Length: 135
Image (cartoon, rainbow, N blue to C red; front, side, top):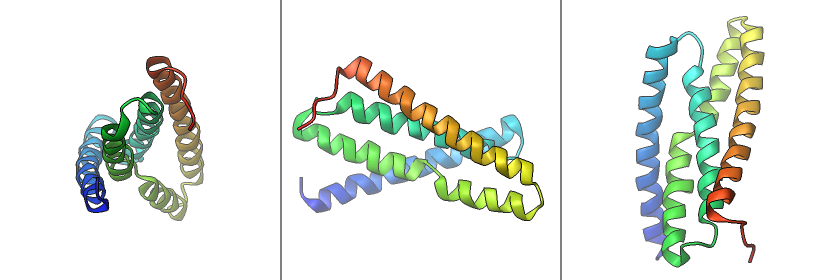
């Protein structure tokens, strides 16, 4: 695939991921309230799981066509879906509002849950796709 085609895959995946992030944030606010960034935490955990699972599950399995799908999902969708910049801004806003405990919990939950999700995704991707082959 040409580099222009790869950029189109990133753009398409990013658009879908961004819409999914917006919908997920709204759903989380309806479910858990908008006074704490639960949606951002949930999206970052889900994105961490997805990028790890998909990456390991597909590693070396689909040839050239698989590389295009990896670009679409891992770079495009996950890039548009995950929200680390939103996490950072929301943490700063909590600090500026004097909600230091909430800011600290946002940092701890986001980092711990996302690391756990990426480990779970790696485990599942390896379980389904087999042991990754390097090279």
